[in-house]
Amino acid sequence: MLFGLRFPVFSNQNIDVSKRVKVRGLFLLLWLLTCALTLSARETARARVAVLDFGATEAGERTAAALASSLSSDDRLLLLDREQGRAAARGAGYAGSLNMTLEEARDLGAAIDCDFFITGDAQTLRRFPSTDPVYYEAYVAVFIVSARTGRLVMWERPSFEAENPVEAEKLLFAQLESSERRYRYGLAMIRAQEDERYARALAQSHGTPVIEDAPSDEEAEARGLRLPQPYRRLRPPYPDTAARIEAEATVDVQAEIGADGEVGRVDVVRWAGFGLDEATTETVRRLHFRPAMRGGVPVPMRVLLRYNFRKPPKQ
Image (tube, rainbow, N blue to C red; front, top):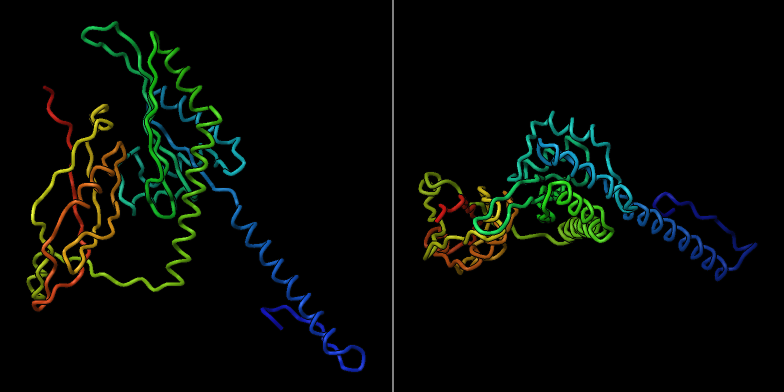
């Protein structure tokens, strides 16, 4: 018997050894094929997606409905009922934040019971440039979040301008409902699923070295531990993508500092989108540290670094 599969038993009186081996090999091949088909069906299961609110405005409601309608025609995705998803999100205390920790995002995804949730902000605004004629801008900030890891899988902010709000929104919806945009959003979620599956398999097959998390200053002092210290503190730039909407947010990253003081892995544990996460990680990778010391010996350590972004004062 192999994993619950019972093979037929043959006596030497009615079949020779070579034939018995061939028959057993055939049964084994059929069993492996059945397992492969079962795993393939699981791997290709559609991702459960919830489209949440895009702000409390009418433009936000229309935008969310248009995006949900577009994604529902993607065979790789299973769109959850919007009203149920929104009710579950409100019940979990979600109020539309686009600046979340991984734990907050995972808890929200668990409350909705989805693989990914999509949230953001959409508005149609009247613009008054100093020299050019008045125009209308319709934009949407789209945030695709993995419910399993809490990570921000993808973000973007398409924007369109026109002489009147109806035309501006028409251009925006045409882009959101396009096959190119629908395929790109779906591909981002499917690839995220594959990456998460690979990471889980890798973690199960290879033991990852445990790196100690940095304690508080008081605890470190009590334990005779010197925490990592940067030689020079760098401030992440405020990117133009954030400046366009005057975004204000906090980005937290966990950085592994080796015994040589060099930065290893950097993970965003509170994301904000709008280019702020990328600006932060790129800055952290440029840092150099005095390594953590225990008993005069340098040791690797994981530290939490926080950066607060505020819109710059107007010139």
